[in-house]
Image (cartoon, rainbow, N blue to C red; front, side, top):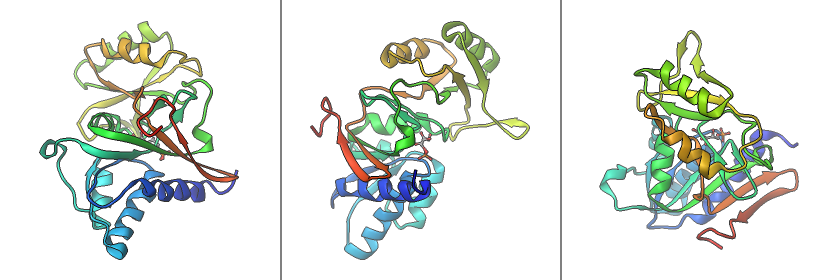
Length: 234
Ligand code: 5RP
């Protein structure tokens, strides 16, 4: 595969074709969508693009400010025109695993409020069945060990609290992340999402089902946009 960073840049920049003046744009989190944010900033400065953004993490908020993108609180707007975000895996039904960057809760809230969701990715993210990427689950610090045990029972796989050095990773919402090592066998992501959300200590799960309308995918043969036949752009 070509230089991965170059592919990320290609996908991130290409996705900006969906953004036009007047739009309210959800700004995702990660090393691919970073290039979308930078490109939108360039278009604001050089082409007079007029948009407002809603970031999905503190990291993206800081980048967007640096790039000169005017920002809004999601609570202050009645929905967004589009969100552009990355993914850790996507399957042939456009179902996603997200949360590798621990931003899944805000990402899902923003995606839920957006008319259209466009994912930016490179070929490494394409899978036939979700689950090789450990499934991120945001959980409350309160009784986190009990929540991990409850997840173990229903998922029947190893579940680890995500660590950064000696301590746990804390999300922008002061929660923790449990990573479930399911293996590539999530054949029914919708049912699994519902099952996991039944556990009281679970705040959100990184399964994004029936949300993605298009994937801007960069690979060795260039960048292409794949529309979800069941999505809002088809
Ligand atoms: C963050 C995410 C990211 O979008 C996902 O991890 C993909 O990131 P990258 O483009 O860096 O591979 O879900 O919570």
